[in-house]
Image 1 (spheres, rainbow, N blue to C red):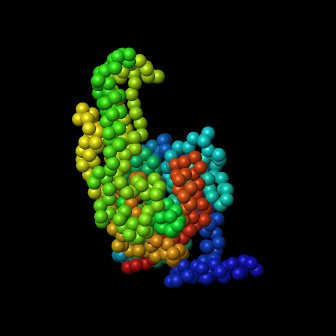
Image 2: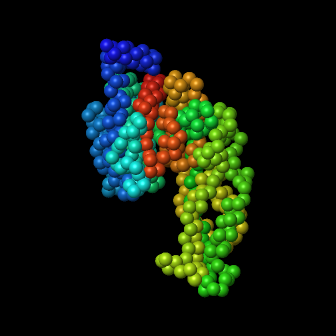
Image 3: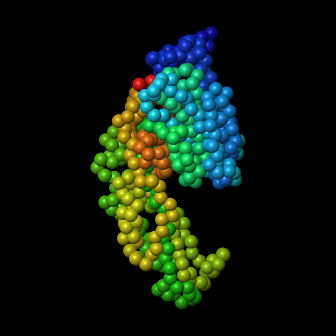
Length: 458
Ligand SMILES: [Zn+2]
């Protein structure tokens, strides 16, 4: 009896979610809804169990796993290998109208994860463990849980035979955690014709009651990223005996310059412009919360991440070295170029003798517009579930693969459209990484809703 009532409730719920649903019967909807959370949990357990720590970032087993899921549904799968062990999976749902109304939508996620130090974990990082309806394990959040939500939405499009006015592609890649050269960037360089999307949906934003503005439910959809500029600063001096200090001590020069650099308050170039995404966020949500995430998106930032100095291993304490180096992880707001940024760093260091080397930089940030069909459909799918929520475009402080698509003119949105507790967000790359299972099911449903609305538009 209980099941009849819950089935009816489920159908009313589904009807309200999909008012023009093309689902053939009540029973199939109910069956689908009943199985979805269990299926998502089972898929995530299987996915997290496959260790894709990067390095070495071997994704062949996860590629087998995802290809198996897609092939069982009758979805054509193509596999690529950018380098030995770096497998890529590509599944495609083809438009049911000809010609299609627009280019494809790509659901993009990475299969690799950052390494886990087993000694620091309370659970085994590659034995998925469910506690309090959260799945613990390396990659549960970043980004296998998000990948499973995308996969479920993709499968629902196929199972419900949603008419497609354009293609939808599921793309699972290796190598994101080390820069994406053998993943997204390799696909763009070697197989762009197979993708050529109008839109990409990737990681980036999410829903939170505390991260963006205190006490307000805010869903952030990332439309741009800060630019990565990794710098090595090198001081050269003269070696000598530690008993007799000299002016040419490379360590002294480096430490004094870094102190000047870090002590100077942010300049005009380090704060967002008036028409920037951060200003749009402030207009939408009011005062931003104060935390390291919101701090990082409001200014260009520098993290001093390493020093290398000393002679010998272990370094001799009575030898003044002739060389000292430091690493700076700089994340630069959109609108500031690499050369402008380096000139600013050089001025703040205040020592023309120091050498500055660019170790790595990302593409110049491009801001994806928000006045698009997919953005509006994501927003309305979220608001249908959470009428009190504020949906806003956001800037994210870290780099993702979707940024590699923006220079091609692709509209990339980074969003996991479910509410996440702040402590779960904080454990991304941490030793208590976990994903609320309800969030995976919710995100799958919202993504499906937004995709369906977008692919049905001719
Ligand atoms: Zn990630």
